[in-house]
Image 1 (spheres, one colour):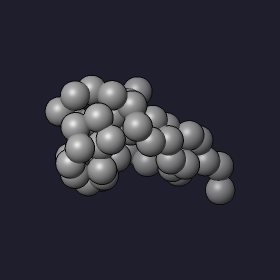
Image 2 (cartoon, helix red, strand yellow):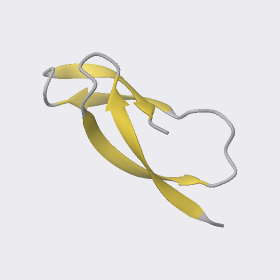
Image 3 (cartoon, rainbow, N blue to C red):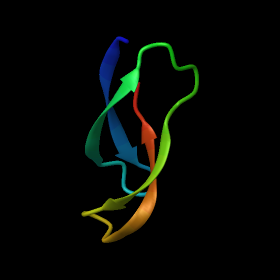
Amino acid sequence: MAQKKVALECSVCGSINYYVDVNVNHNQRLKLKKFCKHCGKHTMHYETR
C-alpha cells in the first residue's frame, strides 16, 4: 500500500508538531488529540494540506 507523509498542525496555536504516514486513498482529514509542546497541553491536531 502506498503511503505519504502529512504534517499535523495544532488547532490552538497553529504550530506543526508531528509528521505521520497515512494511506494515499484516505478521504477525510486526519484528526488526532496530541500533546502540543508550545501550548503545554493536549489539543486537537489536524492534517495540513
